[in-house]
Picture 1 (spheres, rainbow, N blue to C red):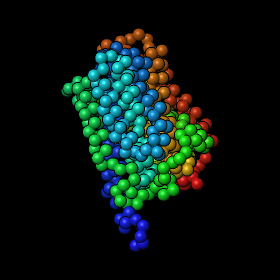
Picture 2: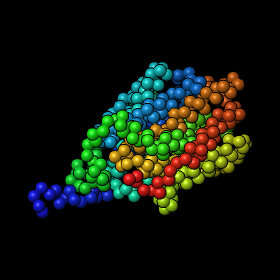
Picture 3: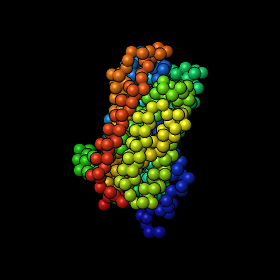
Picture 4: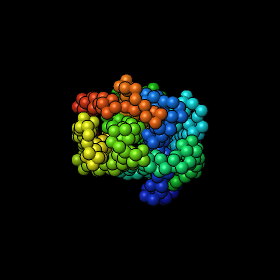
Length: 434
């Protein structure tokens, strides 16, 4: 070995066990972030009663998570490229713990909104940081798969925010459960700081990230943003995928529980189980969509098929009243499974720009996905209030089937917009941009 050559161990790629451990610890925070994202769906009755909320106010409270989450995505992508994911994940988990505590102790809805805003802004670093770690610790061909697996892990968090959360709230109260959630999130921050590293080189191994892109960037934030928005696909992927995410995040993430309780005779626990099942179907199917896309060597076509199928199934769900419970469950699961095609957005965006901008591209793509929940949760609530006929039940507003039908039709409109936008997208054929 010549003088100045790196030690032998630095020429080796990291063992898979270490790579998955680093990535998996980051995934723990994403699990917490997803849990926080959908928790209000199970707490609708408690939050409406304690804070005296209308549907619009409840939708707005839940969506405060998305407001800051979406706003954080471009800064997160830029910081992930410049500072590295370890610092972002640690700071994000610490702030999320603080936000959860604020939410748990909120004396009124304004403070509760502030807590949700803190949670959303900090949780917004989780997914982009996971993708950034994957580009350094994993083989490039695994990127689409890890994107789908990330969603699955996140949905495990959403599952915890279903029946387990409902049972815990019934036993201990929602505020006490949220305080415990804050403590767990703080623990995640500590573990991530101790164990996660930005690049295998920090552990003495070779990185999967191209050497020319590991150098500290000297370009300005403004120039990076100008560069990345010069790619047509980035604009398209900022808006089109929200058609798929809005279906699951607005129904499974908030409005599905009251809809199923009010009009299909579900208990709150049963409705929470159904919402969790939708999210699980969404995440599991994303793994299948990722594999299919890799085999076809296409991103655009599977994404278009997913949008068309999801919108047809959703139209059947909302425009066929009086469905039997079996048929309703089948339609909701199928619609969620087809909506899982949204996961292709991340690989599609990453392949549409030079690798040095991959973190920023991932942030923008994730921002686009979350726009669906950010817009649809409060928008559906507003339409429900506009179509409310004054009926109350158990201290909260009762909305007719027709009111839900008109509100849920907004998702179909976004689906039509997505198809128009995707018609102009450039196929990457699963190859990184030169």
